Image 1 (cartoon, rainbow, N blue to C red):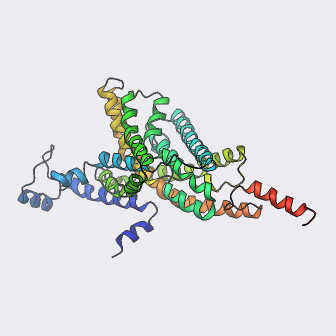
Image 2 (spheres, helix red, strand yellow; image 1 turned 60 degrees about the vertical axis):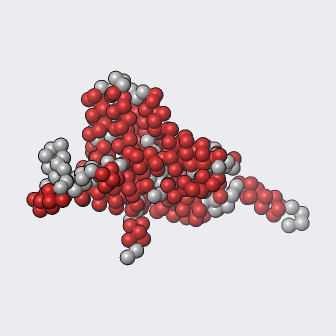
Image 3 (cartoon, helix red, strand yellow; image 1 turned 120 degrees about the vertical axis):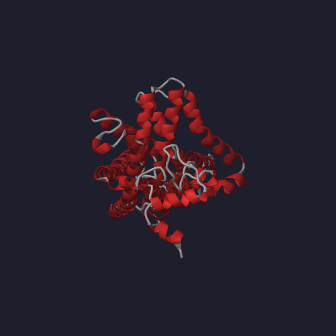
Length: 375
């Protein structure tokens, strides 16, 4: 039936399609249709705390995987992603990776700070929260980056993906919220970093472990996406404000993080800017960040470092922020490749071939050769 191929044709499909499917089933669940209730009663299902019957809350492995498993699956994803962070990267790739991560993070932080100050950090412009802005703008789509730089960029562009893995997950967003005044205890940062750090340690100690864990960068994604959707109402995707905010977030990610990356590449004398434009996207897994932040806020509230009201505000924005980030993922999956094609054509018209490594040195050698007496 080629179901997987069909899903993968959708931009960010492995994240977006299961998320919407989970939201659809949960929306049906919340209607408490009489015939579904009757079937569940006949099967001997237990009632929920509200006294209803829901097919996504039947207990056992099914509920743990499809309804309640999002955070565990996100943690597994972070562990496996950490294992792919290769510390043995070339100097050129390391330089580009650091520049890209810095530009993308600082841009997301600046936009989140500015809009949070001008509007509201929880329910700001078009309902965009600081969490949604930073999560979407600081986490690029690594798979798309690798694909675009392998076609339009050079070897060190593609090699920088090892450093770009650092922006996977909620750590940068959590750190940003701490800088902006939210009081998270140190244990919340450790709890977020530990799976990534352990994965990175094991992956760099043993190449076989890195190879073994590589499928974990992809495999958990549709599962935690479904579990996130299974706690959402499908109506949120038809909310004009949510759709508008998601589109705006996607456009800001492509335009602003792309522009910042281009600027920093020019400052550090990189002629080709294919890499920063390729990184100007939102990763599908970024949709899991609001849930992870809400969990960290709950830890902060239990330790007394954050008020219960502030922790609840993070919990309340999970569904809307997740939807906005999902729409941003779709938007940047279309805008990102288009921007790379445009930049590539512009560069070639100006004599810059992005696929060539160390373009300035190559040009200098060619100039020396043409001016030599034997030329």
